[in-house]
Figure (tube, rainbow, N blue to C red):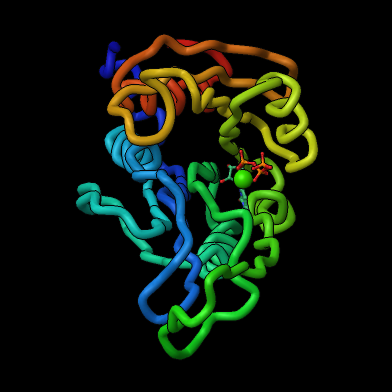
Length: 224
Ligand code: CTP
Ligand code: CA
């Protein structure tokens, strides 16, 4: 990558990124979550700052250090992430939602630790709010909205559906079954679908490099 050419590409811009999983409480000692480590979102936040942006990172629970120069807002549940993102969306020129938001949460959060009195147990879940779908309504007219799509099958079909239904400028497709892509790997290989119909497969690389390519593509509409 030729960083000299991209260094100041984000000068004067505000970038809002979400990252990590969400954590949905069952009782005081248990919760539901997923395999997201937050690495891709943290890499995007770090790289956007290096490219000159003023960056805010809304992060679910991760074990990653706060990126240099980035303002980090820590949240746990999808509802907390929803509030944090909606409150900040109107300030941003670019919003990138990489978080693996839990699709469901327990219907009730128990105040006391659940005791194992039953032989079988079913947990009632309710759907969480879709954060990304709401963000367009809270953003400045020409701001850029980017989502991720984690898919195991019919990738392109679902990616395009998310692009359209969530009113995105770009959707970044992750094949979560592919080795060297997605959750818990140091590298990623993604394909970017643009609202104007453009399709750009990015080379497999470490997540920081992918973050740089992605930020470049979002800004210029083309590869480096
Ligand atoms: N997303 C969100 N709020 C949710 C669920 C997802 O903002 N409650 C965002 C994710 O951050 C991602 C995009 O929507 O940018 C797509 O997430 P994904 O899990 O791939 O799709 P879903 O819309 O949740 O649909 P499904 O899991 O059924 O494929
Ligand atoms: Ca989902």
